[in-house]
Length: 308
Image (cartoon, rainbow, N blue to C red; front, top):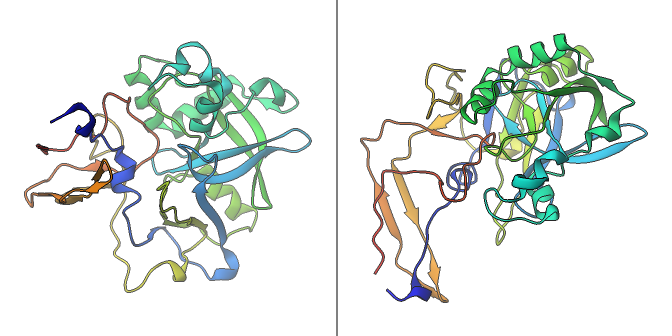
């Protein structure tokens, strides 16, 4: 094979699994009428490498953020600009600051929010207690104290404002976007129910597509489900927080990939599809945006592809 015809197929985990979902996932304890739900658009918020829900932090001083939905975290975790300094620009590949900011979902300058309450030691302990999956992720990178900072500030989701404790992420590379915590003890859902914004701690996800060539908006519905996002009956299954870890990480929402078709174009010529099929697969793969592996260590499937 000549050099120009070589194809390095290392697709990110979320490209294969998340964005090929064709039905929405309805998760939670309660399903409500449409008048008690909040629908948020999912899209390429920053135009590059950031697919999620756009929201704001602050009031007189504001910042717009692109956040990923996480079934692992219960708190909202915000990326900070410290992540795009020094070695942060070299992982997974060499980036400019603008590219890093886009990858990080528009990180905040935490010093711009000094007018809000900084987290106390008790608040940091609460963040640790609420987010054991994030603690595990950070410890895998060698950080024994997963949260250095926190911030009590208002978050605005499409005109609905909730003031809550947010974790600030200042280090590490095995993550990319801010986390909108949708775990079983979600602080955001709990506070929205308390304020009467939604009727119950239910939520539904229509994944949409983050494809650059054929993007399709998705949606996150808080307080119920979006009946227009699916046909037929829903299938329910429990979300476990930790009894089925994937590579030492918590992964409540996971699938076993038994059938995969890869279609590609090389030098303008469409190639014959590559097919992977193995009905004996039992190991799970995470449908989760809280970790992005390095550029050199993408998703690993039990597949051997030979291109000639």
